[in-house]
Image 1 (cartoon, rainbow, N blue to C red):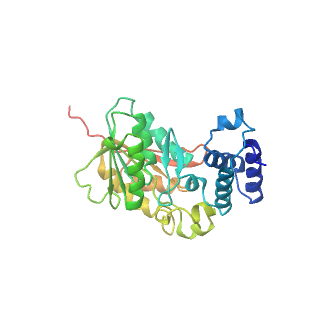
Image 2: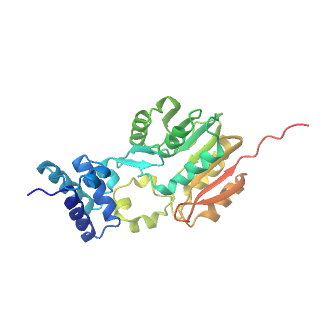
Image 3: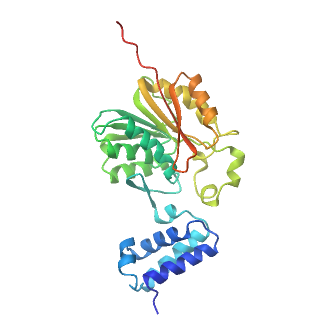
Length: 289
């Protein structure tokens, strides 16, 4: 006898609970929706719809992968971020709600129809720059990443969102080669986890996400030491920046940007109230009398 949607959801939840996973209710629903090609509304309004044998097999396969701690985003190949849906692979970090604080800062800094340029350093899936461009139709941007595989994901996401015409994506080493270029806004979610901490991370991160995007060196600050002066170099006078940090890196990262000459430095919390994004400005040109 076939399982119904509600029975399958309940059984999936119990299976993930038994595996000791956090968030089993949501994970079970997302995997059920994908396996059966249904929506949350379908589950609520037609809970007794039976699954086909193929759907049950697909769900079982998804659950087995999740039990091995593979992230749901990798199983489904997609993840929602801000107001956009992004393709996700093992070559990029899974976009997280914590990073939305950068998008929030950008959208509060520039009006809906304002023209401005964005540079996203370590663009990954394109989450930051594409979420901003999707809401600011007059903006244009450049995303840089050291990984050609990550850039392929970002290019696909830009195309899927209809933003490829306003977003160039290039392989590079941070700001190397950007001589003479200047931007109104620079954003970045660089690697900031100390090398010896990575082994203690949750398996979903430690075993499935690219180490290149995680490892911030012995103290987690290697990228910021390079980026602070370089971000100030490529910003236009009066331009702004926003970089994601680890929860305990506020003082160190603020100091690095202050030493580089940044003004109006401030740290913003994420949705959990933890320090998450350091922002600031480049000194504006003084007007002659």
